Image: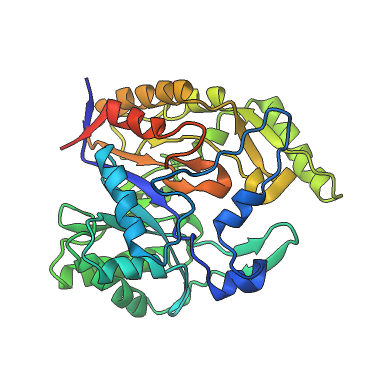
Length: 350
């Protein structure tokens, strides 16, 4: 029997188009595909999947790509693309074009935003690329977002536009932003904003500021004490230019994800297809090895059982297309569209 849910969100990375900043930082024409195509194996049986048709190595300058993606997603139970949204300062954004093209179009795509409020670094060279500020005008930010909120395709819950905040704990203006956005949304005819906090645990005081919360980094939480000590040693060795990749078993990490969620809480369970940031960071990366459709199905089945017991049934799939971190459910040359089919096997939406 399928578990019925209100929403199945999936994080959407709008990075697959060239921008001047990435041209300057990484070379002309840089997108996520450059990292994926040039990735090197870290160990003998290391597999680096590549995208296949009907999407392939797409370019998000073409809004019809998003339409094709959402059609595939919707057919397999995904309800909302949650676009990572980068607002660093007053009208200082990156990667905003795909969402703006979507807004101007009439394509069938249900979507919302996740404010990725973190500074950008070149981790290889420990070089600051773009700093996140918190003294920007809340009025300017809300005014930019308002046309999206008012769009009929923008995801709303209880007449509230959904808005994720990646790191509320370190957002210096977080409380003020929530209060201001709520008041402005009510003045515009909504019942407020449906805030969802990322990187949160049940005991965090910031959970009182949001409607719901999640922690998509949960896969790292269940490491053994010995493994945590070993990981600290690896990080220290990196200071001396000694790089050892951190490799874990997908089976162990995925099996423990979501298992400690209280069904009476407002926490949103997370489905996690895999992780391999060596594609982006080389030997500085983190890899979950040996992920497979069989292990993913076990993970999805366990998560469906947890969601079925919760009062508010929401789900986050992390992620739709973070290819340079090995974290995607789009069709690939290794597993085809099997991950999507598995999600649709265990979940249905109201």
